[in-house]
Image (cartoon, rainbow, N blue to C red):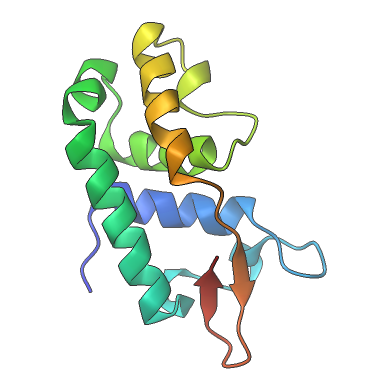
Length: 118
């Protein structure tokens, strides 16, 4: 599967900010290539939907695709950073409000060694 810059940045951020059962960041030992096909499909759908629904807001934000993908992961999971703290004013607030309904997502390692999201 070919991933766009937004989705790639989203996944890189997900692996960096998520930890395994031992508390170590997933990106210490895993990369995007370790994502299960079902997880990748869901990520692609979520990212595509968010971008399409919020195209005008993303354009107004001035964020490049990489930063926007990174912020989508952080914001939907209610981390301590994201769209709301970029100094974007109302645009940042609106993007935050649009990201929250996507809900929190956790990464876990399956018995097959692949990474999944729930």
